[in-house]
Amino acid sequence: MSTEPDVLVIGGGATGTGTARDLAMRGLDVTLVERDGLSSGTSGRSHGLLHSGARYAESDPEGAAECIEESEILRDIAGVCLEETGGLFVSLAGDDADYFEEKREACESVGIPTETLSAAEARELVPELSDDVDQAFRVPDGVVYPSRLVAANALDAEAHGATVHPNAPVESMTVEDEAITEVRVGGSVDDTIRPEYVINAAGAWAGNVAAMAGLEVDMQPTRGVMVSLAYDDLGPVLNRCRDPDDGDIVVPHGEEAVVGTTSVPVNDPDDYEQARWEVETSIDECAAMLPPVADAPVVREWWGVRPLYAPDENERGGRGISRGFFRLDHAADGVENAVSVVGGKLTTYRMMAESTADLVCERLGVDAACRTAEEPLPAVDDPARLDAAVDAYDGQGPTDADVVDAGASADVAETVDTAETDD
Image (cartoon, rainbow, N blue to C red):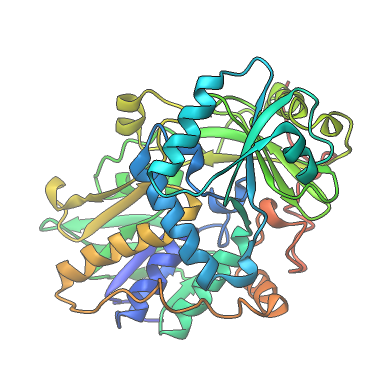
């Protein structure tokens, strides 16, 4: 391992591994560190939606356009990291018909293809849809398996010369003459790294990492629950066509369906309540769209924490308004060789990585173009090899524990019997 890499990436989720891949492909010497195994943060604890952008089309058209563009790129490069399911936005009796039209028209305006369906046509796709469904429209949503996606990015980063340490927490940083000169890393590394440039891609923990360098990155993480139920052959993703609220999405996972989610601010992304009402509300609300989930056996449940940037949340007004990303160049804060990348969505991780890598290359005087949108990720036609990589990187998250055969899911699946919850 080089203790003097060009770039140190802190954070082993999709954005961190994607950035390491991008920079390594451009010829830089990259080291990535993650404290708890790859995909252990937000990336591996989502509902696994591959966004078409429709959820944000009317409130954040720019972000929605990014989603449709990036989801199409991922379909080209990510293979078995994805499942092509399609999606439905369904409107129930009593839902706002004007909102349905606003949503559909907003999708069309940013290039998200839609097809309006009658209630009967929607039930041809999902026979057990509620009798209260009035109308629906189709969008190109899908499912992403984040443990595989993160592992594939890490594999390619290493294939291009990067070093990846899945269990190596950052313990401290030294700042001298307006630059981070040393980063003390524990765990499997147990050494001091002296990088030329530092990328903070720690997600909901970005504020904690930044503080080690005397920087302020004001995060407002929110928790959300996902509940995986035994329900076979759902078909498309189901989205409730209403203002974003608790329990408005059902995501197919083979013989399971993941329902969710909630949005509750937390102070500490490592220590937060896991409330039973969140589970019950998610199931009850999703059952309004798909009644059988009300009585379906619960297979597993887990919480994730969204890496939301507080200034954006405060300006826009909170939940569901935007999931845009922010690249914070800390040269403006007096630390010349550091950047934090926060916010965003799993679907747009590659774009976030490209933007971050562009800045780093500019700062380091590297003239090399991004190639991550054109070159397929490795092993994405070989699920056995990819799942072995998930295991090797200690990268199994609960989102896709039912799909990934990594031999490491027993302690992360968080079945109902072992999930730690509070009333």
